[in-house]
Amino acid sequence: MSTLSPKTPGWLDWYANPSEPAFTLPPGTVDAHCHVFGPQAAFPFAPERKYTPCDGGKDDLFALRDHLGVSRNVIVQATCHGADNSAMVDAVQSSGGRARGIATVRPDVTDAELRRLDAAGVRGVRFTFLKRLADAAPQDALMTVAKKIAPLGWHVVLYFESNDLPELERFFGSLPTPLVVDHMGRPDVTRPAEGPDFTRFLRFVERNEVWVKVTCPERLSVTGPAALNAERHPYTDVVPFARRTVEEFPDQVLWGTDWPHPNLTDHMPDDGLLVDYVPQVAVTAEQQRKLLVDNPMRLYWPGETA
Image (cartoon, rainbow, N blue to C red; front, side, top):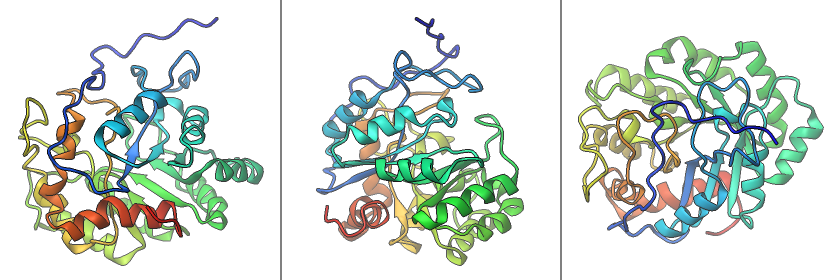
């Protein structure tokens, strides 16, 4: 039996007893960005990982889903598992059709393996450009992956910092698949939401086939307040960015919890209070329905009703 690795020093575990949201999610809501960590004893973490998290497996994820009133999940491969998608695939296959997956694959992935993942419920791959999380692959290697997945109708999920968009957007625009951007491209929320930096990002969205996750305010916020202690209006400095995105691209936005919130260092949010962030950025019932139900269903369960 292998010895389990200790957590990264200072690691913040996910919030164990989330509150009841004041905002009632519409029926059919999809959490379009969440992860599973192990459990390590069943699904060991990758040797090349840059962090060792706590366990946060499928049973805990599905318990949170039911507590918050979410109907479905999109489970994104966590970087701590590298290109071994076993934990993610197991969670998707255990969901009774209520989850889809986003994988990490290497350029030498076989068509047979991609077909296996597709049959299991995987619908895309993630490219990470944050060096603190994973070593970025060369662009030609990523293009090889994108060309292999395009015939399956999959998309590419992009995780990058806003400062890196100018040097990456030409490459992003050349990919032969739809694109999904994590966390609004991680804008600098100390700058104006109407300013040139975020406007450049939105024009990139406009020019390409891009979906945007208006997710992770707890990761982007500088001034808060945090989603803790019954705070029903958290992360007010992020709200203008998410609200502008929802207003300009109501049919291309997605929402998710980011549970179990990897690599947070300041605080661990109460997931119930994160739900109460939603009506701050999607202010009408129509916007909420598109963000939470219609858009993710169209992307991940086309032809199905919520």
